[in-house]
Image 1 (cartoon, rainbow, N blue to C red):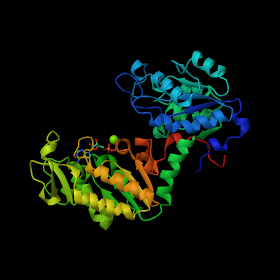
Image 2 (cartoon, rainbow, N blue to C red):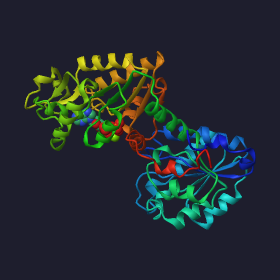
Image 3 (tube, rainbow, N blue to C red):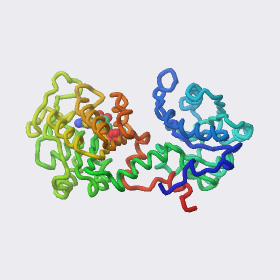
Image 4 (tube, rainbow, N blue to C red):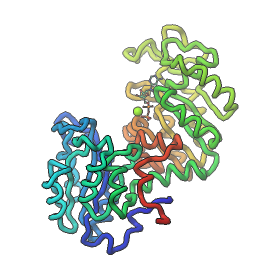
Length: 400
Ligand code: ADP
Ligand code: MG
């Protein structure tokens, strides 16, 4: 990686110092205002522990939800701070402001080995506008800046990009490093065969990913509703399936250019509506009728995709194969996840990106059997599109 990380910081840069850490604690909350899924909190622990063990105190900044620049108790980080305390077994202070005398006093009074969580950065009007004054004020809270929020790195906000311009050292955390290394290595120097599987609802949101991946992959497997737009381009009847009419031409162009790199489903699981799962049928892709919609790729397609995955040395997956939230339309998503888990066992690098795909893998209990499940939905997509992530770009380079 061409950016400095916490491991490049010297003892003197950490002992007795205030480490200001941008984490991604944007976690789902349940009805009783407790943390619903703590994956992202646990993912930040290695960095927090690394800093504490070296004699720093840790001040944590994060956003949660979309409070649109105004305080909103629904999006308070207080329950997250309490949850963090149960995971670290260390004292965790919480201050219900972020850009205030109260917050800077709390940051100054923090002792080595202690953790302070400040309130949601998106309660501040200047966060999403990357306000200069706010960036400077936040930078004053710490002696070093660590950005570990991969999931927020595609946004140039005050707490991600802004602070890094005003506080040095500014380095990547261990999670950020891991995310960039897995995704970066897979794109730059993949072990072959390199296979990518794309799915999800819309082709429009993923066209840049397809264009970016296509030259480098050995095979690109397409599932999800996205496949229906390709079916239409092939002249097949897609019935009531989700098709993006304005992308049919583009799909036809891709089919013409991609040759046998592009692998489409050969059959489909169809029903008249999602409310009628009992009537689900497996049909060949030529047999979808006007009153049916494809809600999952079919059994033979699952086998075809799983067979391809079994031969791969690098696999990147983004986007569920079907409406996995509604059984039985979860079968192909399960099959792909299981094929990837088995591929990991035989030495392949397997990477899952995208919020819904990561949720599907977690739901199946297969997280630990993937080489890497990205914590950043939008950020991992933008990375795969080949875009520079502003939160990363602002960090110190290796040669600085
Ligand atoms: P990710 O978050 O992993 O990037 P997306 O957001 O692109 O994935 O897509 C996930 C959504 O796509 C899911 O809600 C799923 O129900 C939907 N989806 C997948 N296949 C189909 C289909 N055949 N018809 C309608 N929706 C689908
Ligand atoms: Mg999604």
